[in-house]
Image (cartoon, rainbow, N blue to C red; front, side):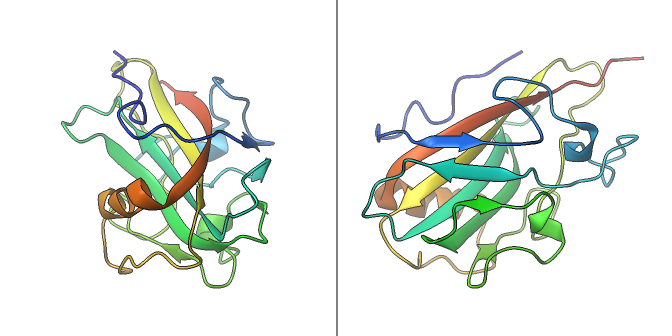
Length: 178
């Protein structure tokens, strides 16, 4: 039960590339990217390793988000929202979000599980395949004026006017029903 692409209604911007050692675009997440905190056996809540290239020269910082538009809610589900990542950074190590390895100056907002950092995939059993949009946003300012207690949706609103380009990967996850 897939919903629309959550970025199709936003202003179109140039694309650049993002890759991961943990999953291929369109492929199923590794167990590490599933959520132990939300009861998935073998899950680790480890943010995926990411590397990106080809972004605009005028990029001043990056934001990284992970969003599940297929969650059984009217608002989807935010798994990760980080911003003010310096423009000199072109990748994040595996599990950077929850192990203190995020770049100096970056900010992570509370995800929809209620804590700052990364929460892994945990689609309801039997609900079908969910898509997780892992997006790197090239931003036109070094510091987005978003409070550290804001929601990921508030970050999205700030990105609406500050995104120069976007790199997207989609990971998938499904938990069979009983």
